Image 1 (cartoon, rainbow, N blue to C red):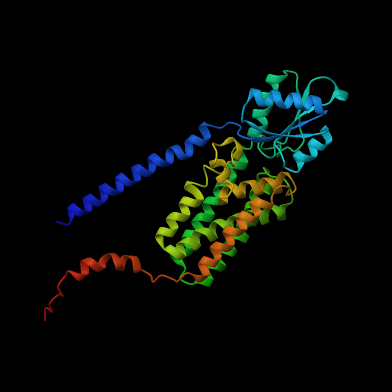
Image 2 (cartoon, rainbow, N blue to C red):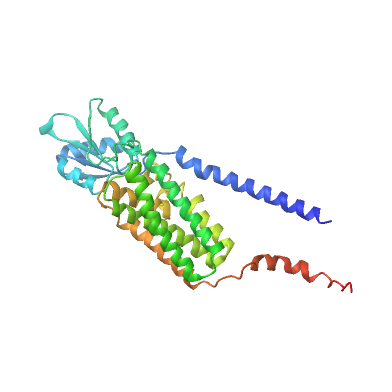
Length: 336
């Protein structure tokens, strides 16, 4: 009876999906539940004796939390923040008065700015906080940025799926990926910047960044799908969304995630894309070289795979699956 193999297949599918669910829940929830500074780049600025004492105090209070560098004064610390070299600076300036001032760069991560402000108030309840590289005023907590970035990656992944499943020409697939990237960049910047107003910077630069992100994701998924078929599409979804999204640090910062996962996420398309868009929107592109190269590599390799992989015949997988069954059947007799 054919019902027994069908029931067994259905049961195996259910078991497999439950196992996948059991793996995905901690993958998504564990990083968010264990946010804490881990070698977070911060600056201590001021005269040498004071900076040495404050650096020691921060290290002893939160071992392993901060990667501390020093600057001679507030001006050089602020410039380092604008160059996206650190998330915040603890400034000791005797000329400005006693105590420590905190200079933040919330454009890099509102979550980090809030955490450091809370930590600084424990050192000095009267501490003065100055945001020298803020995010957009309409999105002070960065929730809109994180929520708006995810659909960009999701639709780019779906575009890669559609190109592999519906387009039978290699050059047409590559052209479709590039066309989608350009249009997604313009539309994404129009929505995030012009309509919602949650990112700043130059419109065309932001559009170019989003276009690069979209092309990287679409190209990677389409390239893997062209090379490996449906297995490649599954691998692309795993790489881009199922693993790349929770490790991206888009909603917080990669240095707040358990390591080495936070660092790994910056070499995946969503993590690199979120970082690059922050640099173009709030830091005039400072610190964007590495994520730009990462995205360019995904886009280039993906498009090459699209162009060199053989086009699989339509229905080849179904025909291969039916072959063992068909081989065991006797040819039907002509009724006539």
